[in-house]
Length: 107
Image (tube, rainbow, N blue to C red; front, side):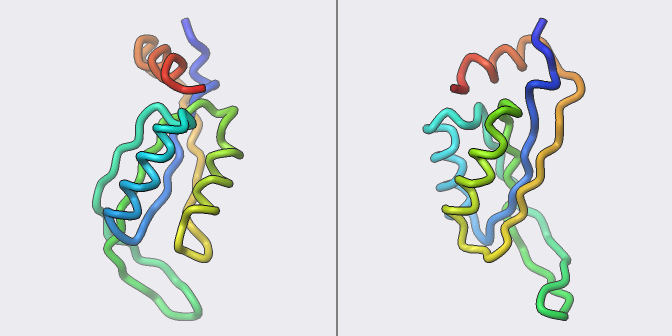
């Protein structure tokens, strides 16, 4: 049985689907992430003293926790935002089969 604490979901947003798909593909190809799902979201946030509303693409990145720092750096270097959203959420429990799959396809 894998230890679920070894895995995480990382949230990141991109301005458009093309940027999101590029990041997702690079993360999976590099084996930093086992899976990346992309979905459209509407974000409300404050930036430069004004409230903004933007349509964005949310990436749900499934990975080994040990790779978080490398994934954060990778996203930061390949992102067009000055301050991209990069948030790690630990997995506290999950399907053994799914967690074993993450381990198998990640470096």
